[in-house]
Amino acid sequence: MRVRALAAVVAVVGASAALTLTSGVGDAAAQSNCNPSYPGVCLQDGIGDYDCEGGSGNGPNYVDGPIMVRQPDPFDLDRDGNGVGCQ
Image (cartoon, rainbow, N blue to C red; front, side, top):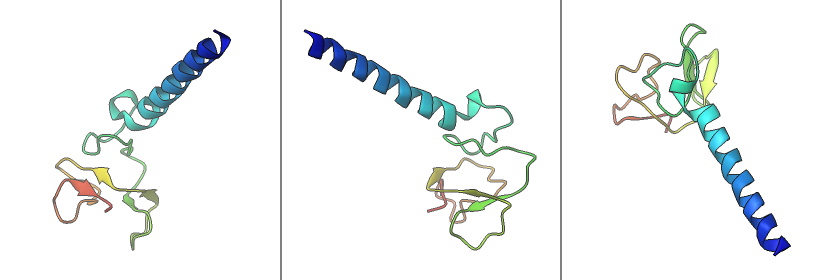
């Protein structure tokens, strides 16, 4: 019985941690000043340009992709226009 209860607690804590991580990092609506063109990540407006990590851009901010991109794409992360940036 204790093992089953412990497994249930671990499952709930693990699910909560996963939800917290997802909503804390990925939910742009939950964060202030996130650009809506990049759902799933919070690229903040007003702090300079974003470039793809490992690319030839000069920053000052970098994003590790791939990321979903909606038009308009003010940071020009989706160069081929397929809706996925930093591939």
